[in-house]
Image (cartoon, rainbow, N blue to C red; front, side, top):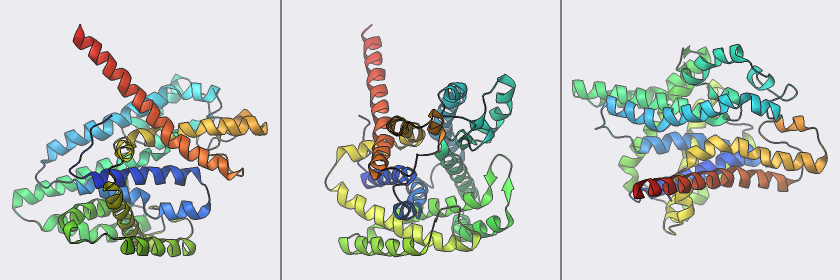
Length: 358
């Protein structure tokens, strides 16, 4: 089992809660739970990453660290899915009937693959594969951390602290302007989502500085839950990609949801549940594999209801059946990646042990 960082394990638990909520949201049990989760679950991950942001880190060290922890895993998973494209097509995971992009609708030869080399591995548009649909977050987090550290490096050179403060206070207004004008930069992509990521990233950084002044108790947690519940009834289909005039409201709602998760994580931290720490330390694996894991339940639905194999291409789940299937989708999306990760770690450890003995 991966070692747990006990210095801030409530954040590890918060990440576990966030990834579980993400899988539940993608399983689409019902509209209400989906919208409730989408009010805050992705901002929570930017927040948790910013929580560990250190002003002392140099720009080069952060780039190296992010390349190792974000881009390399992204590259490995995307390359694997890229090479398996035609196999996925043969198994109906990609097909013309339910494919939503050219990539997921067609069988490819070598020439067909060429344009996607830039899009997947330079521009980092791996979400086009569909089975890696959550990978848009990896790209945004990579750029958010690099941009934030770049501005921090400027601060250090001119001996001031005003630049990061300016970036924090203007990130939401810039996000609104960029979304309204649809501003984007090649490779980086849409600037609106970058600035929203920065807002939540720096919120996590400032939260850690003042966390000892924040009170977590069952009454505050319940109040946050009730607030989000009411908002979910009013706001249909919220997300980080909401309309520009709703961004400020989304930011506020997301902070309430983040407070809710942190409050629950503090309570759970007292119970020392090792399984939650394990999940929190394997969020990348769940992000990468949960959509593919859903296909196991889709196969079950196809078999039980005598559907065409092309229904395996429906993304992310086959809807309209018993709620039991949606629970099965959730459990599959969480535990299948964890079992694969645990098995890989065991085999890797066994091989290393035998190599050391020889």
